[in-house]
Image 1 (cartoon, rainbow, N blue to C red):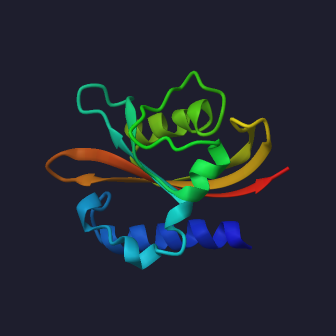
Image 2 (tube, rainbow, N blue to C red; image 1 turned 60 degrees about the vertical axis):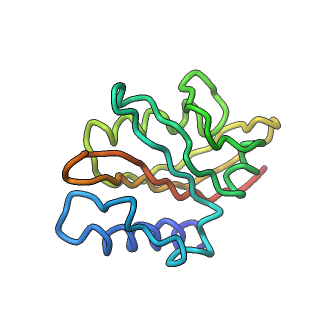
Length: 144
């Protein structure tokens, strides 16, 4: 099943990068290692002053299509009921408090009013010096 392969591959690569650390350095992440699934990913930066403020640094084409527009550069708004807004915002907050990989799945209504079933893996990233700085998310979708 495609959904499991995407989340499994992304988390396996994340595990390989992190080795014996809590999480991998985002600067060592090589997109070419997951190039075929990269369009189904997004990465947020974690606010330094407000760690529950997240900004979309990268949003893949598949994620933008599921949402209905490109979110790159925007702040995650937990009040937005559309994907990924409030749906994944709580998961991002959970990772800030407990920086461990997380799996999630569910369904939602996107910006265009379509029902979207999704499966996601959320992966913390950062450095020993700076702590948690990013969260990478791989998502697979089906529309209804």
